[in-house]
Length: 135
Image 1 (tube, rainbow, N blue to C red):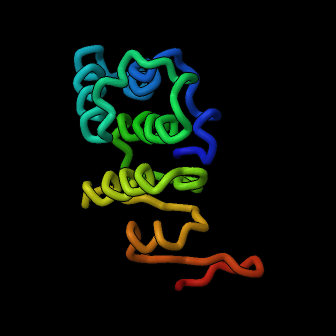
Image 2 (tube, rainbow, N blue to C red; image 1 turned 180 degrees about the vertical axis):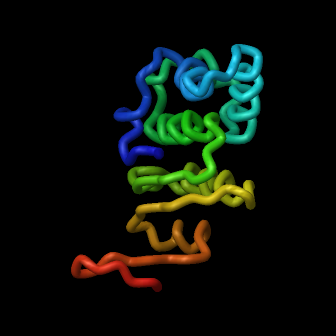
């Protein structure tokens, strides 16, 4: 799950430590974790961020690093809570490209951003009056 507020998700001093946390806790060895870290940084276009201090990142960078922390665990399904809130168009487009770059990845997005949903989903449901309806 990628939280709505990346500050609720990031807790390690550096980007590399935050991204490596998941694979290490999934009992990947250090060699595997290093490989996953490198691949994740490249896939999410964050190469060069390894030693950056997480609390010094911009909001958009924190959002991408939050996604990277989950991506590194190679999930079967991603759950994204309002992934575009408070982001500029450039960062939103990066997230669109990242999500659309892996056709085997499934994800559930909770969002009010209809344009983002149009670019990233093929099936939409809406909650209205306490009921879930297919759109």
